[in-house]
Image 1 (cartoon, rainbow, N blue to C red):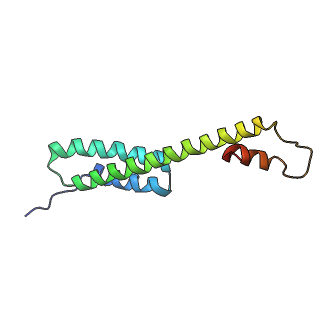
Image 2: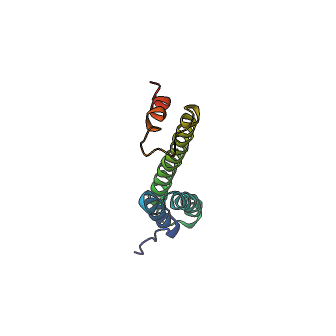
Image 3: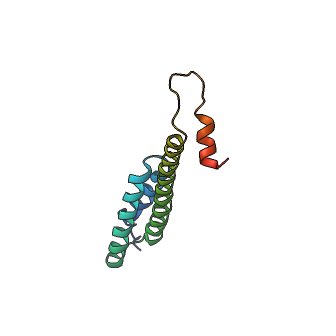
Length: 112
């Protein structure tokens, strides 16, 4: 009895998606998603195994790619709010050695 082969794209999908967690967050997650969709298409016609690997690669890729994008958007939003709060408070005195700009920024962000 001959053992069925596992689809290489399905393996690549899972590996890239898992690398998207720590190594290259957005690029590896996107690659994992693409490889997962290609593997699913190939598995319909080839008769190889690996449907579970391709599905896992897609799920992990979408989850961590989405979380990374949300994190980037949150960071950008925080920076925009901080810049707006500094601008609304009249800026800060760069000639002074103290941190007198911190209190207006915090009160502007958290409404105090």
